[in-house]
Image (cartoon, rainbow, N blue to C red; front, top):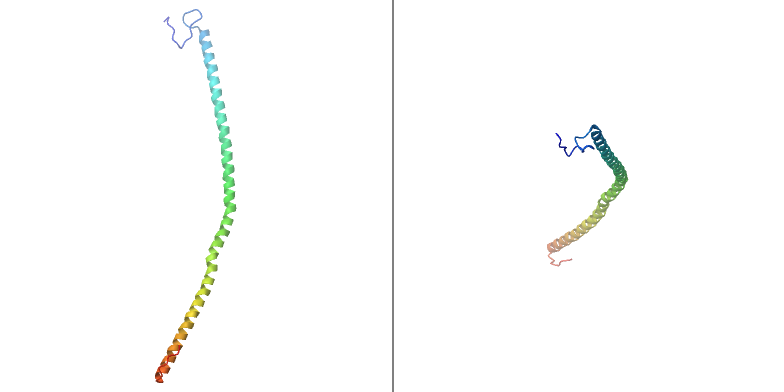
Length: 132
């Protein structure tokens, strides 16, 4: 075959490529491949470095959030205790108010009962006067 393919460099003599021409082409391709591999290796190293930095930042933030939660729970427990105790503190006041109202009702009932007894006593005595 006298025709050369596009993959083979033309020979310096114009015919088929020589071993020297092929060796030169192989060396050029090898250098290009080494350059590309080196660039890819550098890109991967940069990516790994950025990934490690990102991971370190995330871990640091996780530790900070974890510490805030650990420090916040006792505060939250104290706040919850305060809120939880407020109704307990309100009940004695409402119990006192209930007792006062109950006492007033009992007193009013006792007065009305006394007045009813007086009315009955006066009715029996044939006196129709009502004392209020």
